[in-house]
Length: 204
Image (cartoon, rainbow, N blue to C red; front, side, top):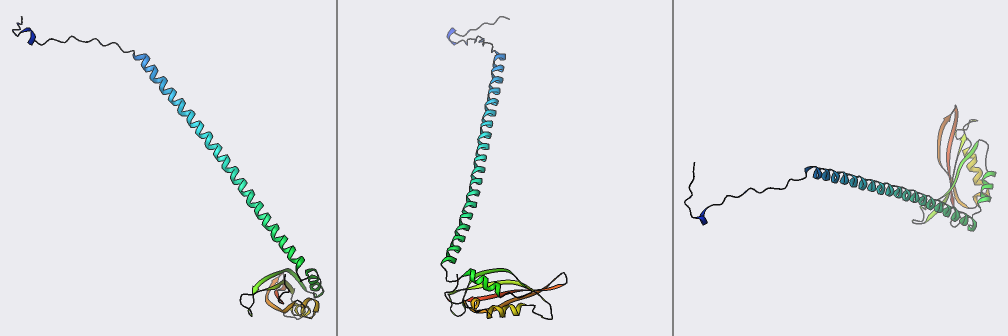
């Protein structure tokens, strides 16, 4: 069929000619994308490895710091213990209380059937003088119950301490503070605590 366009030339719609787009190189682009992904994976792996190594290094440093701190605490404790011992030795050296003589007097006052477990000097508030710390010597020991004596040999031992003038001279009072009875392999034993109250100014 023949078409006749009667419109003036300037009003006629011109048909657009198709534009030829250049063909894209699909394979090289795909290869480039794959290479870029591989490079990103490698970089991510390297970053993770670096972070892991840094974290391991920090853990080792933290462990080293903890060990050093533990050693420092041990050294500090040892220094404090030595300081306490040095103070005790210095106190004994300058004290009017002769510990060696007192131990000798204690040994001379021992009676058969009694043995001692511990000897300590402590401070406690005096009932007569509130706020004043009075020192006491605490003697702990045991006695075998026998020979018809219900208290074992504790009574004679306390009396021997009181009768020993050299031992008793530093104390106001010697009292039996505690007694506990127990049985060990069919043998009755009595544990006791004796408190010796120092005269004012006579303790350690």
